[in-house]
Image 1 (tube, rainbow over the protein chains, first blue to last red):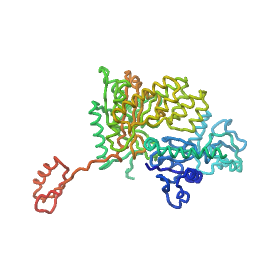
Image 2: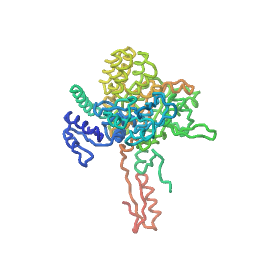
Image 3: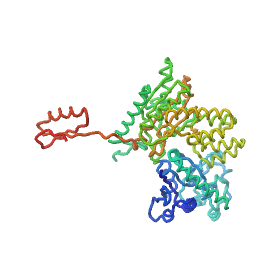
Image 4: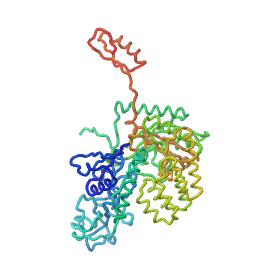
Length: 214
Length: 366
C-alpha cells in the first residue's frame, strides 16, 4: 500500500531528506523541489510533501499523511492525536528560560510576564515550577521583548546561544531538549503497519549509524 | 450582516451524503436488532454533574456547557454510554438483566479552533449490560459484523487494559506514575517513554516490559511477544485470556481482520477489561470504538458489569457506497395529469418517479 510522508520545510528539511536518501529511498526530486509540492519516490511507493511544521501535525492527525517528520518544539505546542515513534536526533536544540542580565524571575515578588512563541510550553514549564505567570505571545525576535520592557523573561528555542548573548540575555534554566521526531497517524499504524514499520526501521538504522559516527 | 455562518465544527449534510449516512445507519440498526438490542433515546441535554459522576477525571474543555434557569450547569451529551448507564440504573431498577440496548444519536464535543474536526457526530452503537467478560466474544463478533457493513477494507484492533494494570499492580506503582506511564504508552511516545521508564526504580525486566508494550501489536506475534515479556503469573493469565479470545475469533473465520495492541491503554479509570477499535481504509481516525466498563453502572447505584461500542457514522460517509436507485421520468401534457399521477403511483411501488409537465400529446414514460 502506498505511503504519504509529510516533511517539515526549513531547518529540518535538508537533514531529513539526507537521512531518507541514506535509507536508499528515491528522494532526488525532493532535493530540488522547485515549485512542486508533492514528490513521488523513484524507488518506493511513497509520496512526499513539504509543509510548515504546524501543518505537519494537522496532515498526520487527519490521516492525509501517514507519517510526518517534525520538531519536538512544534509537537509540544500542537495537538496530541498521533503516535510519536522515533527520535531522528537531528535539528537538536533546547527550550530555555532567559532574562535580561541581572534579573531573576524566579525570585521576583509580584506579577511576572513571559514573552514567547510557545505559550503552552511556557505555561506548562512555569506551572511545574509552581509559578503563575502571564504569557505574552510574540511571533518573532523574542529576545527583543525583555530588552524593551514588554516582559520580564522569555521562553524560546536556543541552538548555540549567540543571539541571546549578543542581546545581553542570560539563560536561567533549560525547559527541555528538542529534536526532530517521526510521528505516525494512528489509523495508518493499524492499516499499513508493514509499510510504516519498514520506514521506521530504515530510519532507526540511520539514526544508530549516525550516532556511532559521532 | 446576514448570519450565514455555521458554528465551529458543525456541518450541513446534503443529498447523497444524507443518503449514504442513513443507509449505513439502517444497516447497522438492522444488525443490532437481529442481535436483540432494543433502542433507547435520551435527551441531548444532561446535567453536567452526570459526566462528573461518571468519569471522575474528565476533559472539561471538551464539553459544551450552559446554564438552566436555576443556574445549574447543563451539558450537551458527549457520548451515549453514560446516559444509557443512567437510564439502566434508574429506569430498569426492578428488572433483572442482562440488558441489550442500542442507540443512534448525535453526540457533541468542543473542538480545537480550525482543526477541521467535527463537533457533532452521530454515534450508532450498543451497550450490553449485566454480563461479564464471558460475553466479550459475542460483542466482538457483533463489532466485526458491523465493520463488514461499512463495506471497506478494515481491521478490528483489540487491547486489554488489565494487562497494563496488572503489571502496575504487581510492581506496586503509585497512581501518578501509572497515569503518566499509561499516557506515554497509549500515545506510543517512544522517546519520552524510554526516558521516563529509565528514571523509575524497576527491575530491568519490568523496564523492558513497559518500553516494549507499545510495540506489542499485530496478530499472533503480538500475543507471543506479550507472553515472552510477561514477568508475573497475573500477566500471563491476561495473555492467555486474549489467546482464548483470538482462538475463538479464528474459529469464527475472522483471523485476517483481527489485530491486537496491548499498548492501547486510554482512560484507565473507565475501562476495566478489553477495549477495541475499528479502522477502515480511507479514514484517518478510528470509526468504531468500545470496551468493557464494569464500574460505571455502580456510580449510578446499580452494580452491573457492562460492555459496549459505537460507530461514528459520519466518519464513514465518504467510504460508504450507495446502491444505484432506478429513477424514471413521466412526461405528460397538462390535460392528462390525472392519468400521469395514476401511472406514477403504480410505478412508485418499484422505483422513484419524477413527474414533468411537457408539450406532448400522450403520457410518456422514459
